[in-house]
Length: 182
Image (tube, rainbow, N blue to C red; front, side):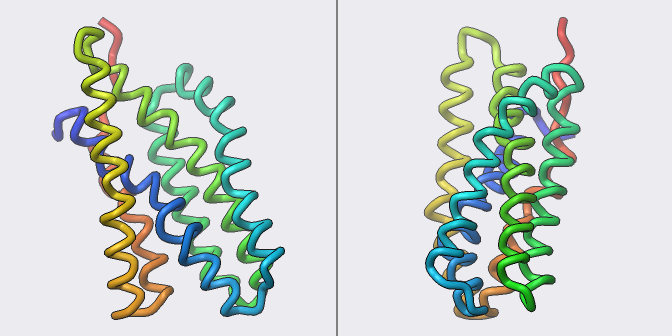
């Protein structure tokens, strides 16, 4: 079994991938290549963070009731469905973009607050700020690393391959442990 704090790093990095790879660069290119205009791409770009932001309110409350791990795992599964829908429905790019934005936004709302809360659950109050800072550093360093990986993959294998790799953290989520109250 992996240690509780390092086990959250890859899911945390993967949770941020919807912002890094697809929605910042990949999805606008993908959907404009399939005929969407600037206004439609702007709608898709705005829908994802609205759903993510508003969705954190009920999902954070739910995680306090049922535990962090189920929401992290199912949230990553929902994000994965969003990536698949974006590619599977490209014959109708607006529908593909809307559905992917909805699934990515809701999935991120399920994952994001629970990973941060799980760090707090496992960290003693005397070192909790250091644990959160370390977690956020390793999670957020992925912005630069994922931009490089996405560019290399897009050049080598095409945009579709780069979008598909954004679901990598789902496998790592199995190492997350629940915190039991002492």
